[in-house]
Structures are given as structure tokens and as C-alpha cells.
Image (cartoon, rainbow, N blue to C red; front, side, top):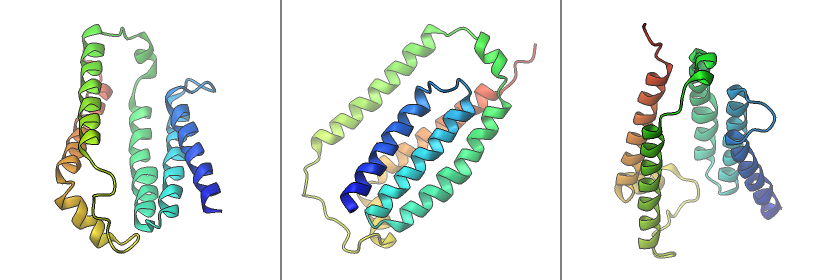
Length: 166
């Protein structure tokens, strides 16, 4: 039963994640945001299968709740008619591709340097204390990189939602 649930939740996560980006049903960004909520809920189901109940609850409460409300406010604040008329700047596309390539290179380098089975696994399944100790000792740098990346994304959202004063 657990293997079947894993395949169901994994398939739902991949399908909904694809539909966030390439949505054939609607060009409305709210539809993509709702598919993101379904992706987050499917990930929470995978966390439950891993007996990480705290992470599943945080996934649903923080990301599907608070972050998605923030995303929807930003979507509603954007002037979508003006966004459709905006020209794509080649320098921005090149900068985005370079940054994605750099993040991918860092990810592949860190994946190459890890050895499977050599890490210490927390002794209690789904316990938050060993998870917190592991997160803030061994994985502190990736945690901080993700937090800076989220900060940059928030600044980008503020700049995108700013109206041009002409």
C-alpha cells in the first residue's frame, strides 16, 4: 500500500508541477498558482509517507497557506495587460540563463561530492530535534543559500509589481 501511495503522490507532484509552468488549460496565472497548491499538497503526502509529519504540516501550513496567499496577492497586484505588451529584454534572459546554469553547476558539484549511505541518519523517524541539529550544523550553508535566494525572489516580485510613474 505504501509503495502505491508513493507512486500516486509522486505522479501527482510531477504532473501538477509541470502544469504550473506549461498550463494548456488557461493562460491565467491564478490557475498556475492553484496547480502549485496541488503540487505542495502532493509533496506533503510524500512527507507523510516518510513519517515526517512535522514537515508535512509545515509544508501545508506555510507554503500552501501563507506563501500562496502572498503569491495570489502579487498576481492580483500586477497589471496583466501591461505585462502582455512588455518586450522581452535579451540581457535579462541571458542573465537568467547564466544564473540558472550556475545554480545547476553548484547542485551537480555537491551531488558529485556526496557519498550515498555515509551520512548519519537521525535516530528517530520524523523527530524535529535531530532534523534541526542536522539542518543547522551539517547543512547550514545550503540552508542560508536558499534563504538568500528567497530574499532575491521577494525583491524581484516587489520590482515587478511596481508601477511605472510616467
